[in-house]
Length: 189
Image (tube, rainbow, N blue to C red; front, side, top):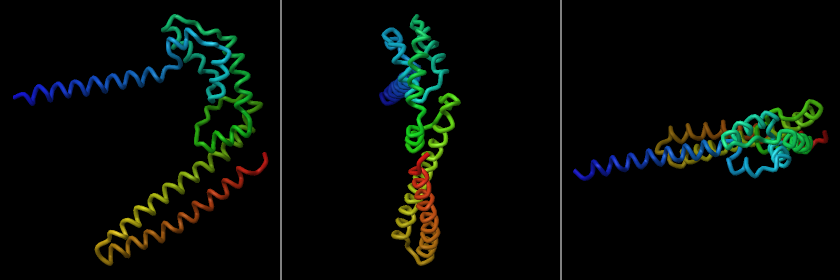
């Protein structure tokens, strides 16, 4: 008889923990906390946001988050900082790095800087995607090798060998794709 109340209590505790985690996660999604809103250096905040790849619409999110704290952002200072930060962010070298790390780009660069940034970003992203494909295929290869090692009969071994041969060809192609993408990434812009 004692197990049922304990089970209910454990279930409630788990639900409360889950709800608390969800609230903490949602709070983490806010553009800024109340404390950050109250102590913000708006110029530096704008610069930081630009360097993190956020576009100008980030200010609307900040305005909304800070309104709950009764704080109004200093928009001119924020935009001055953002304008400086975006010029530092929107370089071809940073575009290549950003893409190579697999980060998403939210079209935050102004038109006069976007073409060079985006071109290098796409080159970096191709290399990142090629590397991810190679890693996925290497994982499949390990799984197929395990299947071959654990095969109990000739039919299963033959099937695993055939799959490994097919994977070998796909791996060669994936390595070639990665090499080509890395070569393009090393080319001057």
